[in-house]
Image (tube, rainbow, N blue to C red; front, side, top):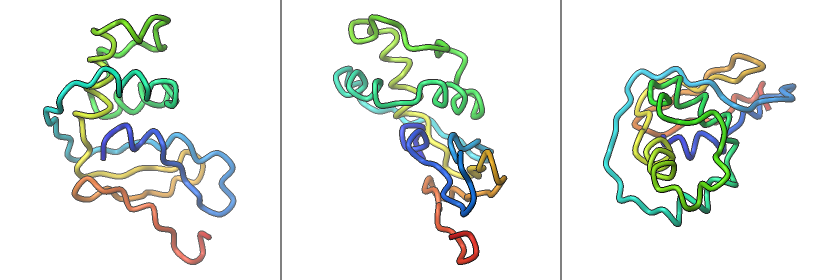
Amino acid sequence: MRLLTHNMLKSHVKGVKNGFPLSIEPENVVVNTVDFNPEFVSRMIPKLEWGALVQAAHQIGHGQDLPEAVISDYESNEDFLKKAHHVLLEVEVQEGNLVCPESGRKFPVKNGIPNMLLNDDEV
């Protein structure tokens, strides 16, 4: 699961009012090289919850290079875009859990795929 995907997931457990952002309990994190596409990264940044991305990157040990806030001229700052590209597209949680911030419900991540299915009593 890439952090780009993580940034768009939330818990829908019955009774949960604020199921975002999910915490990450990583067991296996890998880094894969992905071709740098500055246009794609630039288009994605306004759609992200940046604070949640930075928090997730820190939880998996890859947030040390990210600024706490999006810089004003990010579209033309290649260094910033490369850092964002790295955490969004190259760092992947292969195994672990996503944890609802409100209920504590754990959603497993296996082979890089988060399982967000709910039990009947959670719907």
